[in-house]
Length: 116
Image (tube, rainbow, N blue to C red; front, side, top):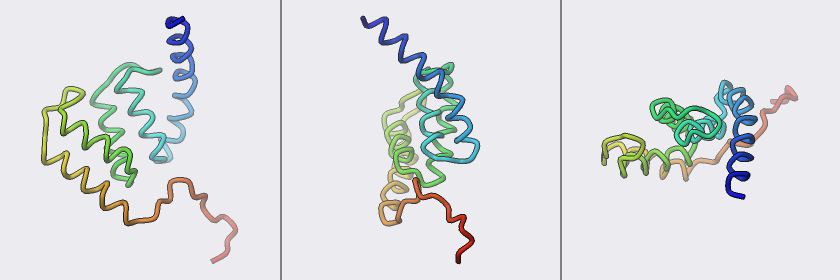
């Protein structure tokens, strides 16, 4: 049973990756985050820590709080081949904290009506 579940999961990730790439090219932070997780955990893609961390950083720079918190954890713990870095961890955590004061626009569609 476990083998079947793992095979099914792999198939779902493999099908999702092309769509995630389309959204990531448009700088959609949740897609960048999801692709990073795919790279870090080899889900539908080959494992590549450098690329996964770069994707997370891109999402974090766009103000995506889950990416900021994930990077804070990674640098605090020294995960994915990184040397623990309290400074980087604190910087990402501070970005995430600062973002709590701003309204999110993650899922707000642009106004294409021409109204101003």
